[in-house]
Length: 532
Ligand SMILES: Cc1cc2nc3c(=O)[nH]c(=O)nc-3n(C[C@H](O)[C@H](O)[C@H](O)COP(=O)(O)OP(=O)(O)OC[C@H]3O[C@@H](n4cnc5c(N)ncnc54)[C@H](O)[C@@H]3O)c2cc1C
Image (cartoon, rainbow, N blue to C red; front, side, top):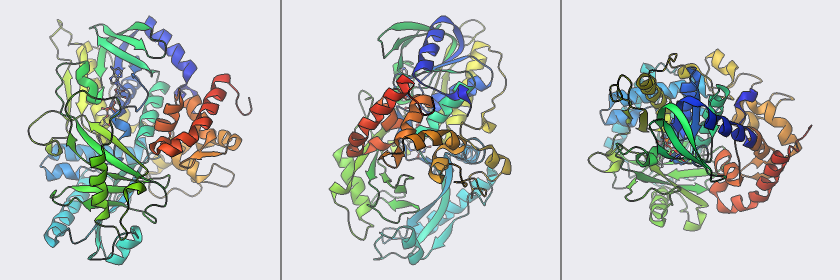
């Protein structure tokens, strides 16, 4: 592994000191997908970068997504051809070049129940074919994302055996991208940025933008200091208006349910489930690599102050459960819901309900001429979605470079593999299709589960897993927690259980894993490591 990508408590201390002493080209505020992507974009163009988050990597909306890497079909349906094409292109970039270890092609089935009319079936299939045309236009090879097809009822139930056979006349199968874990994408982005020299500062809140950079506070010590930078990229998502009054957002809450392994046995595809009375809106049930399944998602406008961690209200939970129960052979009781989470979409304000608001992104500020021949020194990038984070980052950094008159190379991120991306897969052009012989769990090599999760870094994680093999929950071993503290910037138990792993999505699992998390943090702090 590339040691320059390692993030940990001692590196953070060193980077904080330097950030207070030097003037950076770019200060990025916020380390969700957009900010971490902007830090990588700027650093890989040769700029000096400081990137700060008030909490942790992926603390905000980026860890609460549905984990879809959309091909853009839903935007095409609204006539937003540009965004649809952009999504399909970005999906191909992630699948084939930058993160084939984190983003996979995945099958999705729409069960044809009595709630889906024949006319709706024909319309959805026509949409899937358009989606396939988008794939082709984005030059993503068909073997990677097969075209749509119609399944009979028996095959539909093989992919989701718990579906009620009553009135089930088949299913519509389509392929799209999915993230194995959204928070881990952000961690990989931040570490890749660090490998290119970006100073990554978690627990560092920007209090105010000053025109010469920002006034910031180390949230671990309470100490305030100045970060000087030639230009600032504000990538604080749903909180962006707190630093830039030009931003007008209309946040919308999306809730997901979490089911424990075994609750929905045999689920191998994602399911699009019709929401009764909501026209062509569908809920999603998605199996997870750890055996859990997530069901989402609601879309409710939210007014008032933006909380750090949104709550999933009981009415959202019951509404989602009702959508699910409408298609199950044996309905699930409320107690079957092991956990629930909610996130706030940073939607740009506009007319109509939030489900209809555009998912386009906006880059504000950085206009030339505001300060003499230089632009204004704050560029805010907001809106959009995870799928298009790379393009958002590119647009923001382009604007920042021109605003501050920085000497920077062109954007390189469309072909820059993130830490853990396997060069062999990229070179073969196979993207994340069927792995090459020996790539997964080769004899004597790391087990397939570690390769699935860490890609090319699995061999480096393995000695820690061998030393601390006990499972702490959701299939995660104590050794992996130690890896996260040593290399992935985890500073406390919450970083380990809620963002580097997703053990914490189920409260009982989180409580059971806490002692192991504390023990591994203590080991990392003491340098008490296997082989040391
Ligand atoms: C329920 C839901 C489901 C979604 N599903 C999908 C999906 O399946 N596919 C998809 O492509 N998109 C999806 N999206 C959209 C996507 O998740 C978001 O557009 C994206 O994650 C936004 O990322 P961001 O980096 O802009 O913001 P965030 O991830 O919110 O990052 C902002 C960061 O800024 C930090 N911050 C805030 N204020 C300060 C400050 N003053 N100083 C320092 N740091 C600060 C926060 O701590 C946070 O970490 C979904 C969104 C929601 C809500």
